[in-house]
Length: 74
Image 1 (cartoon, rainbow, N blue to C red):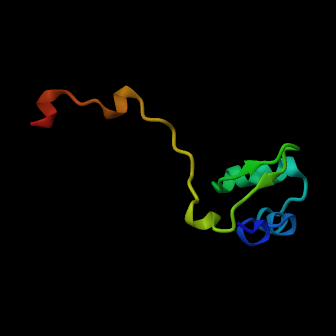
Image 2: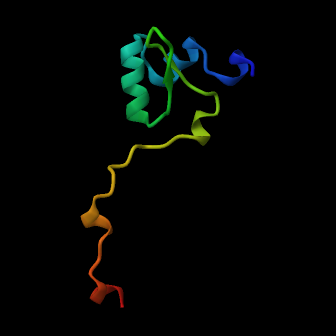
């Protein structure tokens, strides 16, 4: 694993988010649905292939969303 090949640089993060402050970068990454991890100092780390693992968080299904009465299932 080569960190420079596998992860975006701080400059690239600033470019894709339009932000320079680490908390603002994280806010924007969340809004864009881009997964990231954080360093011990709280700086976001994003894989270079973020677009292939991009996921928007979906609200969890509740029991009411997935449950159907048996009469409807027939």
